[in-house]
Image 1 (cartoon, rainbow, N blue to C red):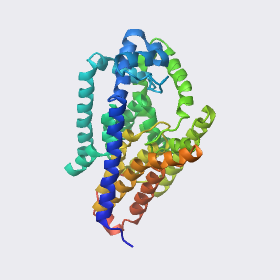
Image 2 (cartoon, rainbow, N blue to C red; image 1 turned 60 degrees about the vertical axis):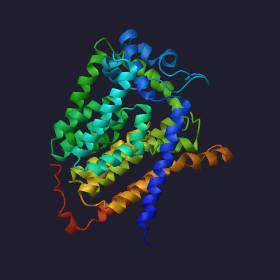
Image 3 (tube, rainbow, N blue to C red; image 1 turned 120 degrees about the vertical axis):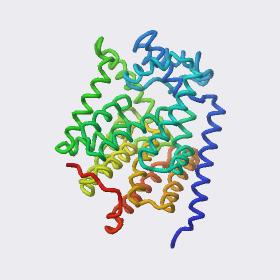
Image 4 (cartoon, one colour; image 1 turned 180 degrees about the vertical axis):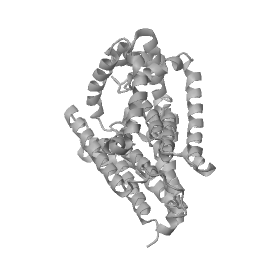
Length: 400
């Protein structure tokens, strides 16, 4: 039986409204608007003043964060909010931290909005798609926390466009910049390494640009990276706590085992990486000569496998959506169905989980299962696209 389009649209709207109200109420009640950008800003400031040891010392960092940026952060004890980005990210944030925080935050958000608009237009989508991006849970969540997702999206789109143009080395040069946030490059890394015979220029380009980005942080030795490694070792224990509003496999598994040990958390990460590898392998078998689709699959694999990925990072999913739209695979009705499924999963997931948690101390989240359902629908529609229709679509550059 066909679904009523008006009911699908209503479900998508209701899901958006519930999610957005939840985010806004949380930010207001916690008084933590722009908290993630505050972490970035303080990271750059601490590096300029006291070096990497101060950046990665969570006790010192949280004390300064509570004193100068987020009053009340430590009212209920130690916080999980600390600097967990790579040393190059802190290095890049140094000039940003020279601007007063309030001014820097609004500039960051405004430039991020431009980055999203530019990304959507570069992908060949219209103004309606840009509007949907700006009201999406991912973008609103990014606004609330002051995250870096719009800039990651722009970098991801640049890699995607280079891939489409069969400019492998250039794609690698841009992709290597993601060493700043390596959890967002998981899919790319899997794809290029699993098809190394075709993509060795991209791997070489990524190694070159990543080395250039890392160089300033190792000019005086590897102490910054040791401090980062120590901080991440401690973070594994924190990551054992469950995290909602995430469609990634590791976060889903942690809902089943809240407070998981560091070892179990690492096992979750390995399982997720294996799932992503299977996804990329299937994409390579099905669309081996379709670089655009493989690029889209790499984005999906990243969302599946990332050990730390929240709603704002799902802005990257604009890339596979654009591929499907440009191929004529996504009609308005199908797009609305995907939005309804995904946003309702995000909106209702926390409530669904909390009911289970109150009863048995753990539960199943909705965020990842609804995302997997969206992936399954997309794959089905891509495979079922009639050959006659494919001939009218955008030409595809083969992986030569």
